[in-house]
Length: 93
Image: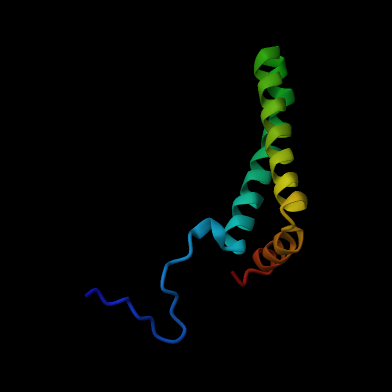
């Protein structure tokens, strides 16, 4: 006969995946948004070298920012993203 694993008070029987925690997902979205902004800022420098390179940077930046917007607004994590940004800004995280 097998015994079920017992958990003590305050312990979770199974670990929570990292991306299921809102603070980790919000930090990932923040980093992706910054990467998108950087791609948009350097796109025009790349247009001078090659239109294809500039177009790629422009599309990459727009896609990354659109992904973050979808995460924040469609997934309902807007408040969590703001809280994480404020915590990071104040240096308490």
